[in-house]
Image (cartoon, rainbow, N blue to C red):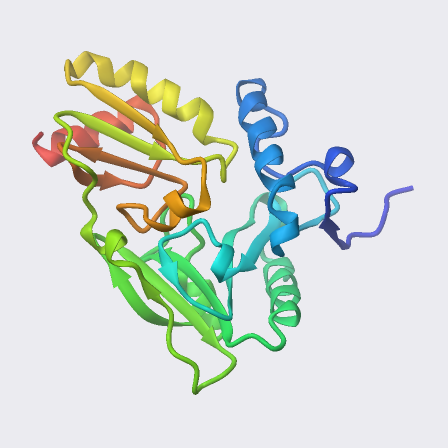
Length: 255
């Protein structure tokens, strides 16, 4: 008999049994999943929440008190949404709203909820239209296309802001490509290695920097601490991508 659909809370106690929602069925992401679950297990004592639908699919939300966010923001007494995804046949059934409602319940006593989006629907970020629908508004921006959106629960509280490091959109000078990434996403481990391989044909040096502490992520030189690609120190993209898409990006950037 099929179990009824419901949202479950992932904890230290059930993480190994329930697992995460992303990349679980793809062998090339086994190491990324292991690192994400290891990272996640270390975050629960900081108030991190991971809630998902009890199905094999990407229907989940992750959030944390913003003081502990792995993101270059200042948002004391807010909750920060790290990742939020409803995909496949579960889209359009109200699960996104239900997951957001759970986040709102946990935000009781907080000044609000904050999230990083793009100016439009972009890979690895939730469509800003969804958040606008439920009362979020833009409270800050960072180049070239990032938005900080907030749902205010205390109108008198200071608005969240991106840190200055995020607004620079430039990393420490390096001649060539720099990929800065973290274990927040199970896809990064595989894609960093893949991208290194196909970048080699451009005969430019490639540097990778893995963020291992919250302090590093909070001082990220772009608004996206999951993954950011730079060339000669300047931000190029937050997206992990296939070779053909990267070739187009490289050509368009006239590097």
